[in-house]
Amino acid sequence: MLRHAARGVCRAAGLRSVSSSTAAFQELNASEQSKKEFLSKFAAFQGTMNEPEFPSNFVKPVEKVENASVPDKLKFNFYIPSAAINQGSSVDLVLLPATTGDFGVMPGHVPTVAELRPGVVSVHNELDKDVTKYFVSGGFAFIHADSTTDVCAVEAVPLSDIDSDAVRAGLAEYTGKLASLQGKGDDYELAAAQAGVEVYSALNSALGL
Image (cartoon, rainbow, N blue to C red; front, side):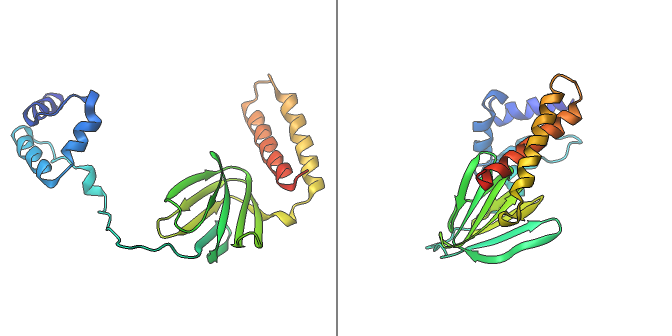
């Protein structure tokens, strides 16, 4: 019944098939007038169905900002589950190790959400002069239109606190485990070994070992 009603609405509204759905929905939501026209035709087939919602009903209109200026500093927040490492700090640049590749964030950066891989977050309080580096095991970065960046990491350790000997030993241990588990069929142990190699390899690279 719902399928027949939907077909009837589409025919009455003059909509194209699903194969051209992107263009059809763009036209449908182009203006309030088009929504009113659709709803007036939908009413004839509505029966007990609820009135449909439109994507624009859930999106707050974007306010146009005239002559918006880019601030001199980036507002930076850096969190781990147990603490706030940075909160509202004003910095020049943050370098992030995203899964798609490393990238830098400065004031005026395009809004972005990025997943972080194991690697180094470099916080430039002053460009290339006052730099603090942290090793993160993973997480997410949220870059907002107002030149605010939030980094939420699972774990974060100052790079200067990492023991290079422990990194070498850990990499050797997990590399050996990974080699010994190949073809054994223990998926959990294999995944743990692969994760260990990935993290210790990133630590090894971060320390330049």
